[in-house]
Length: 119
Image (cartoon, rainbow, N blue to C red):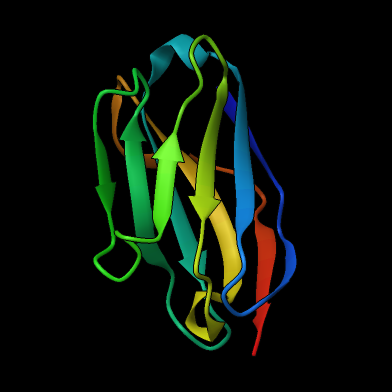
């Protein structure tokens, strides 16, 4: 089992920045990938980006690629989502999720953290 907890959400003005964290506990040695997802009000959840747990590869949604950065500090059970140049379309609940060695999909999810961008 892996437990994930997101933190760092809040209210920010358009053009501002936020830093979200996803802290993992439990069988973290089984984690292969951490993904970030978001869900805006009335919309389906969408993939934002992901990072290999060893920190050697990242992927991003096209619309955030030049503004968001996902990283994992060395030897930390935390993945960070740095968001810059935020706009109203970035508003939503942000979730992190984990893929494990034995599961080829995002089987473990955090409770989410809310991001609101005011214009």
